[in-house]
Amino acid sequence: MTDDRLDGLLRADTLEEVLKLLRPVEVVVAMLRVEGTPDEEIAAILGVERSIVARWMIRARKRIARKVPEAAGWLKGRRRRVGWAKRGRKWGDGERGC
Image 1: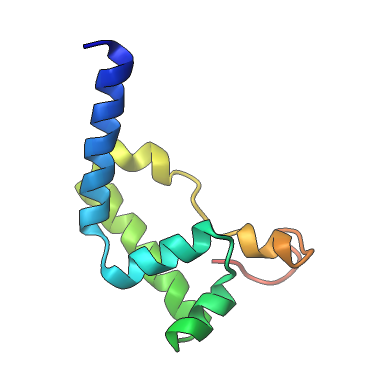
Image 2: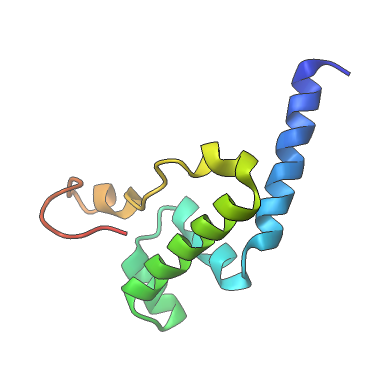
């Protein structure tokens, strides 16, 4: 097996471990974030405060980092910023992000 194929398998195994650690609501939030949905909209969809959405994902990142150390590179610098750009704002415009 080539190094590239082996590396791909290892990444797939790591991703599988990460996904198993996520609660269903965290998977929903992650998928919506990938689609570019702002946390405010995610919170409205789920019927919770925006801060709850952020807290869920912070806890998920900490859980993953603790239980799957090889995923640390994926998590490094992961902060919510997608929705800000969609609304024409820049990070650090005075409002706190997730």
